[in-house]
Image 1 (cartoon, protein in one colour):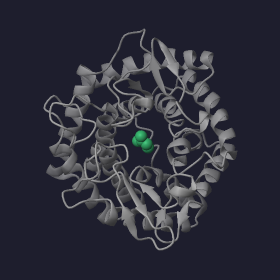
Image 2 (tube, helix red, strand yellow):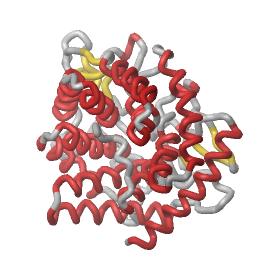
Image 3 (cartoon, protein in one colour):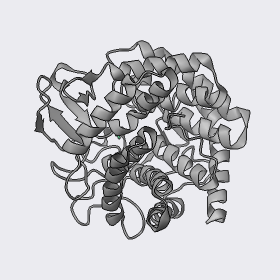
Length: 374
Ligand code: GLY
């Protein structure tokens, strides 16, 4: 495996060394790339949930290579993201994605104290979204007080980190309550997950499970499945509890059973036969989860997860990576949402590239472990 991984890593490193300069010239936080340029997020300016992935790429590459170009760019964007900590009406539970990979990574890799403080502010915002009926509220808006979504399993990493940093168990306790609710209300018998559960915000009773970004109610949105697989793995590792690893195993089995023959990932595992709608972000994220899960379980079972991760990553590399100098991003055929093309369909979206780079770093033994409490 080593050869293709090293080649892909080197190509990614030089693409994003050029990209770091281009993004700085453009003065934006890249969300996707198109026509040789980066494009900012489609909604909510720098408060959009994906803002952390670009600095996350930069920190992973800085950690692996020590090249200053990546750190300089990560710090440029960190300044923009830190300003967003005041935009209470726009920020939501995705502060985990935004700040674990920016200020959190900065503190982890350099010990910077201001970055630590800002990450703790973000963790407190996430705590403030906790509904004592048992879930972390996803989004703002009066009509969405009871909404929780599977993606939040990744955001919980901010709480594990904050508990470790402060010695205050409340962050972990809230994370556990939310993870237990998610296990009970989101995961189905067959190991698949729904995207959204709408709870009664007064009683915590689950009322509805709308389709969210997936194909239909009751279907299986593949990126949500990847969030579940990786999120439960990270819960197991960070909280030291085997029940979450068991949940991750169930999610992994379902995901692996639905990988396409060519190794790519459909946008929804229940989409109509013959429908060409692929989401390579899901494949890259699931590969990261599978590699972590493999390390967590060991033995022969681990080999199954590693083989599936390699199948996903090889397919991304050979079928959907644009390694040309003109392209500022890597993975093509990324799809933000099954029915709504507003945030991108079958284009390069940079959070897919983040997970691809993270997976390559894992395989090379240089992963900066940005989702871990320590
Ligand atoms: N967290 C939203 C998404 O995965 O599109």
